[in-house]
Structures are given as structure tokens and as C-alpha cells.
Length: 599
Image (cartoon, one colour):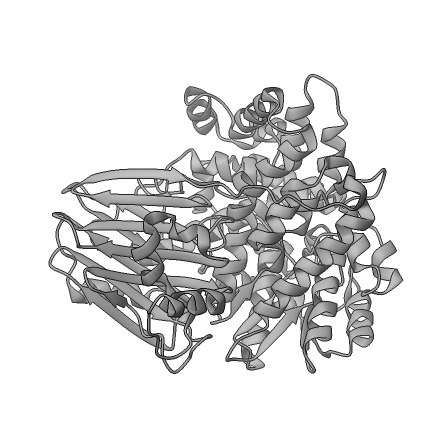
């Protein structure tokens, strides 16, 4: 796991600038900082040594080829054996060693051989012009941001805050990004909060040479499961999923540094915890909770799973009185505004993981999006009304469209209308067109839309950036190619069987997790902000102090009067609508303030 950066073409940044770029994300790679330089290019890496610790120095080099890499390749042992049989020699056991030999043999398509998570930058100087190629994994687990320079170059980095250290960084904000954030809870790619900066989408292959940029997306082909009697069933799907996850977990637990698991108390993380405990003689699990008595407290579920699995369980307790200081800290590591209240929990949890001496943590993210775990998927799939898509998009918004009409200032509302209308409405309409196109059933269309349009930017950026802020690599078993291909091959009626959501997962986990976890209602891993934003609580005071201050930066987009009304409503009658809107604007304000930005 690393952080990477570099450029091709245009004015050469020089070593001082490159050191500043790398230093801006050193937490993500504290073990080694290296740079490869060419006459017209640079490739830099900050290394978090996890596999092949004694070797694996970057950049990787072959004649005419140079490469840096962020991520983990879990099938590197199989690929290494294959390449050795073809005559390649390797020193050490670093997973990145296989990248350039594979590229030499397969060209750009070499990434189809990789099973893991990755962002790769490669310079090929074997032709008349050097070529920069950038690759991202099939699920978008590892990010890359880039921009074109006026003098014909391209610069990239794993994080926006590092990319901004280039002197020619186009820092101007895209004003419409605020509407995209509030309409989608995060700034969905490929655009970013900066008007002239882009991010690579899942499965991207970018080619840049002589000032020309070509971009294509690759897709995972669905698996072809061998069903008993030729008929897909929940029981058969559960058995196959269990076998796939055991295989993937076995590879993910193979590391040269300590590995732990995150146990939220929900089905997905409880299942991965149980598999890890079955595969390793000793496993440590981590759970986060809050001092006091709060709604949706899951600590007793997590503790029950830990007892059942025999893990060394760490319960991390946060004091809500310290939340304002924690908000200031974690927002600095979020490249773009993100309204997820559990960002605070995620940041503190990985901090505890790091302090306990772990470099790798397995999480249960992604299962809901693959197997239909949220009721919003099922409700929308069964909604035949002509406005179903608008209602569905509202469930994914920080503030629904009707709320934005009164929240935005008149000037900002006019700007949104002049640009074509609200992001939430436009994305909902686009989803409706996808459903009407009929490439998949309605439920599967909703799931694919979430997996590739929303999930990488709302969930995965948060997990990646907030774990790497503490030099911890987050591994995600459910997002491995074999599991995603399998999920894409399942019929909708197997994923959601009657009233049972993500039925194959529940079936697979049945013999591994306690009945109390299997039977409990679905509950997201989150922060109970509705209860925590009320008089006497630290978050309530923070919101009042920051959002209602005359100098608040967010007032360029939202009306102070509307914020006062929301805070008054939350004071008198606490509810999810007002609390989420206030939290979301708080995240926007603290993000702008942390970067010294104004509209």
C-alpha cells in the first residue's frame, strides 16, 4: 500500500515540488519516500510496507519502463509462479514485482490479470514519445486525481491535497459541486470539487502522450456459476459465496505485518470476522462505540461476535465531548466534502487500530451494494409509480431537492437552475433512463448504479483516506473480482428472496455468526447525530458557533436564515431531516475552512 504521484509533459516540477507533493500524504506511506525522474516525467511513491517488506522498493523498473503502485495484488503468488515458468527472476516477495513483467506480455490489458485493489502509474519510453498510463481497479478502491496543465502536461496524485502542491494546480472551485455534494452526500466522480480536476472512475485506463489523452473503462464480466440441477437457489448461492470469501480471506490475511478485522456488529463484518477467526489461530477485532447511552448502540452485538469467534476484542470508546476537535482533525484528510456521520467514527477507529500496532484491517464494506442489503433498493425496485426515481434519489441525498429550494441562497439557486437544475433530479432521471433501457432488471440496475456511480466516492474514498491517515491499509473482501463477478451473475430473486435482503450472504453466514446477528434488523454503521445534535451536546454548540457565524464560508451557498430555522427545529423536536442537513452543512463549512477556501 502506498501513495503515488507524478507527471508527464509540460514544465518539469523539479525535486522540491515533488518532495512537497509526497510530503502532503506521507501518512499513507511513511516507510519509504522515493522518486523516479526522467527528462519529461516523474513518478513518486510513499510506501506503506505490507508485503515483501525487505524488498519492493519503488519505482519498479524494466528496460524502457518505470512504474509506481498503490494497493495490493492478492494473486501475486500465482502470477509470480506463472512468470517464473516463463523465465522471469524475482528477488523478494513484493506483490508489485509482477506488474511490469505482466505489462510487457499483455500491454494495457495486464490489469485484467490482477486480483486486488490498485492505482498504477506507468511510463513507457520504448516508443518515439514517452507514454503515461494510469490504471484503477475494477471497484474504484484506490483513487487517482489528475489535471491537464496549460503547457500540455498532466499531473496526478492519490490525494487532492497532495495534487494541490503543484504550483500550477487549478484550485478554482466548481460552484456546482456544492449541489452535487448535498444532492449525493459526496461529490461523485469523475468531476471533483475543483472545476478543472478529475478523478479516475472504477476500472479506468488512461493513456497520455504528446499532449493527447485517451480514457477507456473496463468492465467485469459476470461469472458463470455451476448450479446444482441447473437452477440458481439461495442455498446454492450461499454455499458458493462462502467458498469464494474463504478463498479471498485466506489471501487477504497473508501479509508480512499484523492484520486485524473491523467488527461493527452487523452481518457483513461479523461474517468476515468469523471467517478470519477460522482461518487464523489468533485474530484481533475492533469496534467503536460512544460513551453514554445512545440509539443504535451495537457494542453488545460486536462483543457477542467476538466471544463466539474467540477474537482479542478491542472496544474503542469515544467521548462525544471531544467530537468538535475530532471533526477538525478528520476533515483535513477528506479530499472533498462527505456527509457520512460515520467518517468521524471511521477516523477514530483506524487511529486506534494504528496505535494497537496493526498495519492492515479487513472491513465488511460493499456487501449491501452487491447483494441488495438496503431497503431503499427493494422499495424502489417494487415502486411502479412514474416518480419512483425522484423518490429514490431523495434517499441518497443529504438534503432532498425540496429542502434545497429553501436552503440555497437566491443567487446560488439561480446558478443551479441556469446550469440545468438540481443534481439529485438529474441523476434520478438518468437512473430512470437506465432502467427503461432494460440491460438488467430494475433491482440489478439500481445495484450497479450504486456500485459504480455513488459507492466509490461516498464510501470507498472515506475508508481509504481515513485509514491511510493513520498508516493503515483497509482490505475489502466483498469487492474482490471473484465476489463481484459472482454477485453480478445472481438473479434478482436470489439476491432478495421474498422479504430477505442479501439472502445469499445471510445463508452463507448462517453457520458462522450468532443467531442474534442474523435476525436483527438492518442498521448502518453510523453516528447517531439526531441524538447528538441537541442542547447540551458538543456537536450542537459547534454547529451553532460555526454555521451561524457572520463569517461562515457556507453562506455563499446556503441561507443563514434557513440554518437558524433548522437549528430551531432540531432544538424543539430533534429529527433525522434537520440533523442530517445541519451535519452536512457543518462538513461543508469545516472542509472549506480547513483549506482556507471561499466561494
